[in-house]
Amino acid sequence: MQNFTENYKSVILPKLQKELELSNIMSSPRIEKIVVNVGIGSRLKVTKDYSDIIDNISAITGQKPVTTMSKKAISNFKLRIGMPTGIVTTLRKERMMSFLNRMINVAFPRIRDFQGFTPKAFDGQGNYSIGIKDCSIFTEVNPDDLSHVHGMSITIITSADNDEHARALLKALNFPFRKPIVVAKKEEEATEEPAEKANEENTEETSE
Image (cartoon, rainbow, N blue to C red; front, top):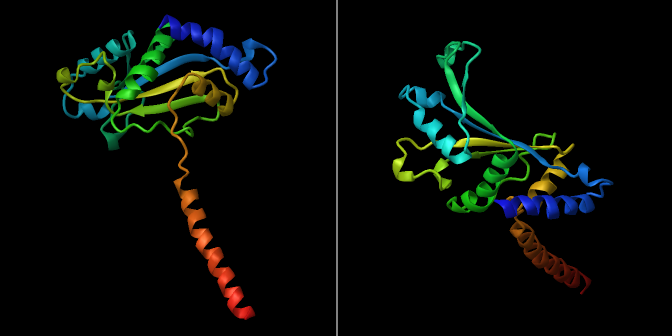
């Protein structure tokens, strides 16, 4: 983790300053905090015990999450004021960098048939959100001990003023964005060539 943090400060931030043509290294976009959230509404329909989710998030993040309560009553969802709706924890500084390192370099490669995350999930203000379906991609959670598989939503909040700078920051950290598909273009080129030949042959026949 120390190497990851040192690389972030000594290599990535100066690189971003040059790449984004910023006047001061302090203007380089930085990770400010990471918010991890798990909704438990569907879980409460089965059982009122969600302590295992709290334990899993605590093990993954190294920080005990807080339970969020509903502020409104919604009859269609059988939701009453004061009912637990989810658990959330906010990571900063060392715990944030440790979680980011493990998430990018350990957890993501464990996702089956993983092809990367969409580069379009920014909110327009430099923040990026993703959803994880299975928490067991983190090595801190033993799949054999899971009574119920649950996912989580992760929001990376940056100091960037726009999505372009935030995307450059995450790319520099080796965040696995999905690569654009270029197969379609090759297929179009292949179909265009026979069409051009056919047109040439037709013009030759008419001239004769």
